[in-house]
Image 1 (cartoon, rainbow, N blue to C red):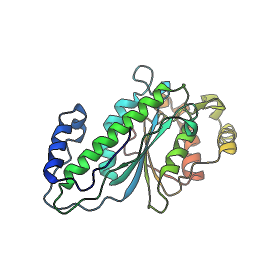
Image 2 (tube, rainbow, N blue to C red):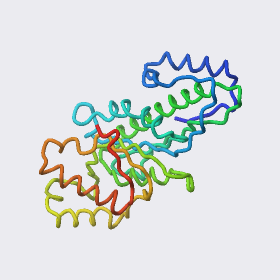
Image 3 (cartoon, rainbow, N blue to C red):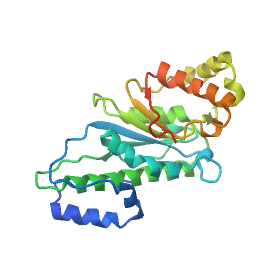
Image 4 (tube, one colour):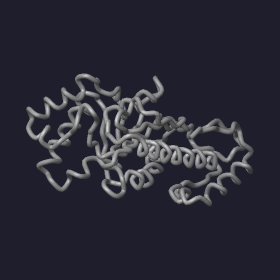
Length: 255
């Protein structure tokens, strides 16, 4: 999908495009986006969405990545004041994945007479469609779940010097790639977790997430019913994301 932005669209044309987009089922996700006669403040936050295409994210066998994406991406964009949206896949080898979707400018340049709310609404529709496109591509590639690579790819897409970034990560965080499989046994004790962390991040390094806000969706869903499995799982990812990568992890959309 290629994201394009019309420069300074005529206000009536912007309204007509917004009404056309509203006819799509997708527009129901944007129902809370209102219009205002006042020019809203500029949006500032660089954002990305990371999408798990592995089998564990399927509606049939896992946590239904598409449903969770549709439920969270618009609130995420609005709550975080996203200025741009980048897209990253989680696949068997995420950094090498062929899946590519162009970034979307969620606050394109406008003139004083433009309907800024309608322009932004259209941009959010494009971003949501872009996320769906990325998820579909990830689901259509060879099965696997390289969470660390997906996070690294999203971090690399963030503009340098753009201030704190926000990442929405639609994944159960079950790392399973050709070189590492996160089994309950591999992290059952503190000693085993330390060994597992080193095995995962030692050859790859940690993603450049320092100072970024990470919002997981679907995190550890298959383990929540078993405290004996969830607590080691959470400790494993807390060590990587917060202590080593220095990210700020939030529960706002952790469904």
